[in-house]
Length: 428
Ligand code: HEM
Image (cartoon, rainbow, N blue to C red; front, top):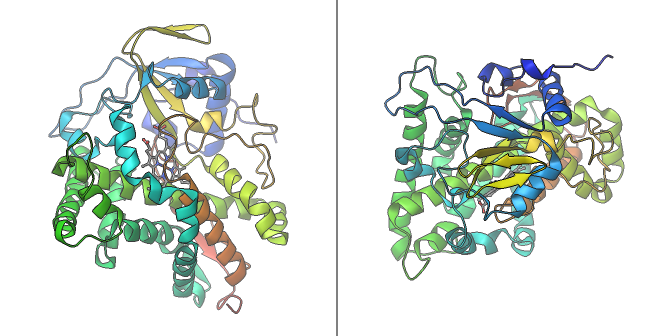
């Protein structure tokens, strides 16, 4: 088959329609950018909707598409910072920072102090200690669909495990799971019509979703003041940063970050995983034949392959030169992790899904630096346990139709993925 190609002049990463194109067309565009214009300037997207908050059109941005450049930028947070108007392409208006201004959009030392409040809960030892819980959640999820022989793999399986795990860690009760699910869909959907109806103001929908989660945090945190447990909300409520406790806005934005980051990304990795294993039966057979032996490389390959988070932004704090390009203070650079994960200078056969790939220096969880994904150990564990239980309990499960993809330049999302298996599966 002739590979799809795309001339550099035809590429506009700011056009949302670009992100609605088939994966192979997107891959072709990034291949061209890496080869011909690895630091490419784009005008910022224009918002043609009437919105209650006007988002002014910014000065444009540089798309960074090579692995080496992204790693170099991530190593120098003092030059390429996260704390100037956020990590999104457009500058976040102050109203939005109220809900979304947490540590992901901050720099050290405050970023490090905030991260320290919760980091112990995500270290490998703590994650190992909740392995049994993750397993029983995965089993419960499978039990609910097992006898039907078919399901929507995203909403009924992949989404359920990370949602319950992070809600439990935060102290959110089952009654609120659906609210968390729908709010995080809206927050990360970038206006996909399934989550924000045509004609509805996407910025307002985004703010309402943030405000709903903030209210949930307010109720929970007030209760935790007098009734502390070992959950993360108690840790946040009782934290002392620079001699002060977190105020209501800081609590809310921290809570939203953890809930949203903790469920959406892992859901997409698991969904992409099933799709990739369906499309590559040889790789599925190799993993099934030696599940525990292959799991560590298979899980990282799923994250590389899926690249659930497409980009993060940094902003120049001073003039700097990178790979011969001179940046000015204030320039925005967008780190396209999806592109770095296909960089032919780093990965042999980057378009091959290989469950035994090693080494695999992918940047699906970000590149090494202060913002490297806090939940990487947890996500790896969740993906491992989910596939272990699926292979054990529904051994012939596979996708039965094409994925229904999210229209987004930020999250490489799958909204629905029909799956089929023998009803009843294998005896547990
Ligand atoms: C496969 C699943 C996941 C992927 C692909 C992923 C991806 C990422 C990426 C790319 C970043 C880097 C942000 C940057 O460069 O600025 C990040 C940061 C972060 N992730 Fe994840 N993530 C995943 C799972 C999780 C989970 C389960 C949690 C649990 C709460 C989580 C919480 C966070 C947090 C809090 C940050 C911000 C860290 C900081 O700014 O210090 N992530 N993630």
